[in-house]
Amino acid sequence: MAPAASVARAEVRDIVLAFEGVGTVESPQEVQVAAKTSGRIQWLQAREGDRVAAGQVLVRMDPAEVEAAVRREQAVLGEARSRLAQAEIGLGPTEAAIVAGVRTQEAALASAEADLRQARETFAAQEAAARSAVAEAESRVQSAVSAAGAAEAAVRSAQASLANARARLERVGGLYRQGFIAAQDVDDSRTAAQVQEQAVEGARNQLESARAQREASQAQKSAAERQVEVVQARGRADVAAARARVEQARAALDQARANRANRSAYAASLRALRANVAAAEAAVRQAESRRADMVLSSPLSGYVTARHLDPGAMATPGAPILTVQSLREVWVNLPVPEEASRKVRLGQEAEARFDALPGEVFRGRIVQIVPAADPQSRRVTVRIGLPNPGRRIKPGMSARGRLVTDRLSGVVTVPREALQRGRDGVAVLVVDAQGVARRRRVRTGLSDSRGVAVLGGLQPGEQVIVLSAAPVKDGAKVRVGGDPGPRPGAARRPGPREGGDVG
Image (cartoon, rainbow, N blue to C red; front, top):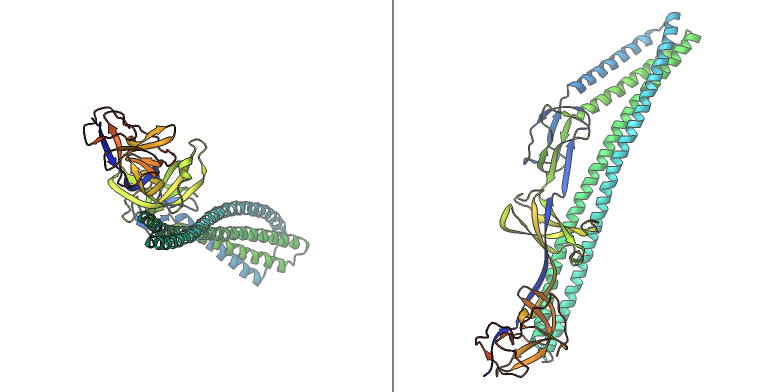
């Protein structure tokens, strides 16, 4: 009596291998709103979650001290102008006034020179820091430009591949109509053309994302360059004011010494007083510049994600008061093993799920593959760009990302239990229409939880034995659908990849 056997039909489907891992959400754009000078926060209404626009006033510092400084410098300027006016009417210093004036102006010159040195050192330090920020922004711009160039090249490459796939489909169609090839070859060529069309669309989407990132990086560079100009303007004003005070003191000292040698030092006295007026005017401009620094605005449109200080607190230069992030698009930083990272590409579609948003799948694309691996974990960070129209995805959230690392489309598959491994390679037992089992060598490829791809040696719809009551030999007759019993005859589970010769 023929042994009973369970069979399965070889079916055509896609096999997809993917990497899944846990990553963290971050914003592509984040800025710290910080004070430029020390002071007490007088007005601050923005809180976490508030939406802000670029240029919107976020913080006002207490202007009392700088306002007093402006008024003080204005008073000094008025006094300097009054003295100059009086001197132009007539100046007649006495001998005692000349001696006292020389000593006073020597001390004033020494003090002014010390102030000038300090102003130059401060200016140099601030300018170096601002230029460093510009260099960092330039590096990000170059990276974004490179990414855009790579995306453009990917578009051209995908378009060329699509043209080749379409041309091949046309040639294969002609051969099929002439009866030289099977319909499966036409289907394979059509599937390949459709895959290339999707690749072109993906490359174009990646190009748009890369261009948007390039524009954002250029905007950050422009902001950094404007900050350099602000630092330079303020620093030059400070140095100019200090230099003017040195010139004022030197002129005053020259005038005093000239008066000691020549009591008719009317002209030197006028020069000193005019230098005094120029120094006072520079001091007024410097004080007014500091007053403008009391108002802080948002450099970009986005959301306040952190509030570090409250009204009444003292702010120091460079210490953040608010953190503003753009949430129109977010990034998921996904650590990927080195082997898997070589199988993904920029612009590739990706998925992310969040425990905070159960049941939802968010789809995006790979926007960046960090070129260096972490030396400890040996993993490469892959950044997935996700549209965030509802702003429901927040920076810092945990995400589970999924990246497709390999795919076979429209391949013949069988259950793992159908495969046998022998000295001559991998084989299956095919049951023909007469119920006779025929051993046939096959060549296998990728596998997933549902089965293994058969790349050669088997046709779609053929029946293969997956379980039998007793060992089945090549050419033996079997009863399909009977109770095969608990012992698998042809059953074995291959590894994730197997290869063999086609019989």
